[in-house]
Image (cartoon, helix red, strand yellow):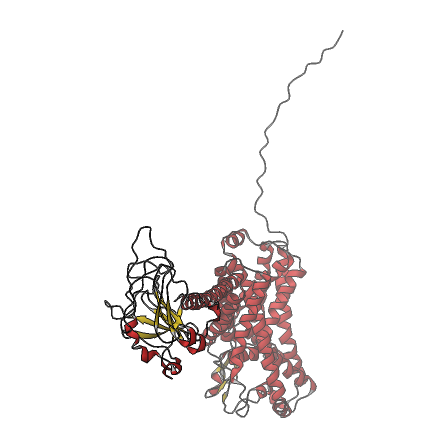
Length: 623
């Protein structure tokens, strides 16, 4: 019997998924261990030397009933002081000036522990901070530090956060989500400004290091003198030197305040500023031997150094992180300057306070004043540098310079054109008529006259020293030298009559080539001359001694053309020369007369204006 297999459709069973609870971030335990490790190492840095110094001098009578616990407590108090706490010494005297060298050591240890633990998230880094603060609180309670625990924990938290953040960033761990959102929304100039602030702080640290080194070199004899005043064994000497090394960064902050201008004080009534030192008795601390002395207060120009640092950082920002907009570059250097001034103010606060009772209760610098001056100096230098190196500034300056050059060149060209136009105008003031004796007009000697008006006559020296007189208007009479120096009037091309003196001194009348011949007047009367459209050639007339005669009613007028002189008839209407280049009817002298027009009458000087024939006769005629 055949068996049958019954197939059924699959049945899906819905199984609820298990909800996972929130778990600890990956590496949280390593974070706690790293924080405790960093705190322990920095604590042992000061506690071990303190206990070692106690052991080395335990038999000294000056120690009295001191114990190693007291030595450990002193080291712990110094450690808390480095994180912002206070330390009580002697009969209740407070010490609040932080040994910033120990602070920097704690920061470096937290940074190194973060990287060594290979933390992979920000959450694990938070446990790093927790471990550091827990260790700080435990150490302070273990040795029963009398005071300064609360402010030290706050300062320790700042040190742990900064060290952990720098370690995570160095390890390539991405930041939290909120920081990514904020960073994307921030302008590019702000993020670049944060990088610039790091470079500015590094530059100021170099400046402070140079100042402290110079002080130690110049005051090394005083440092050794104070150190030799103590009778110490080898261990105590090492402990004393290490303690002063921890205060070297504090001295660098004082040096920064000195370089910025405000200076600092070491005790009430003292002042150390560039160019001036007011001092008083100081504690017997070898490091204080490096302070400036009244004999060598230091140069006053040192305040320029922060300005140069700002300019250098602006140049570095422009090279490493160039900005397309000038406003973004200015924003970057502005943010960098503000952050630098704020960090400097915080360091000055930590490096200022009290070093003991009495006068030593006032030590350090004025933090707000230092921050303000640093902001002005380093910010001003950075602003000038950023604007100076920006490509837009180069474009604007180049355009301005090009505009100035173009404007100056245009002014020169316009002046040259004006001069050329003036020279051309003077050269074209008069028209020199063509000579009949074959001489070219370009070879007319100095003294030739071109007419200024339509009614003026022309006088030029002719052959044998005689004067040539020709009309400016067409159709005027032409007077030229005759044979033997006699005056001769010849007709113009327009049909005018010609009247001249013959060789014997008498007047001769020659017919014109075209037109009627007018009656010849007496020697004392004027010769009637028909108008012509254009004079063909001038004639010459001589006067006594070969000098050109000036008719009555005319005047000599100077021109700027090669020393020429014009003899122009006065205009009855204006009392002066007529319109230059045109006749009274508005036509030019060179214009031909209209068809059918009657010749114009001569209105210029007549022959009667030249005097009697005896006056015109030369020496040969009189003889």
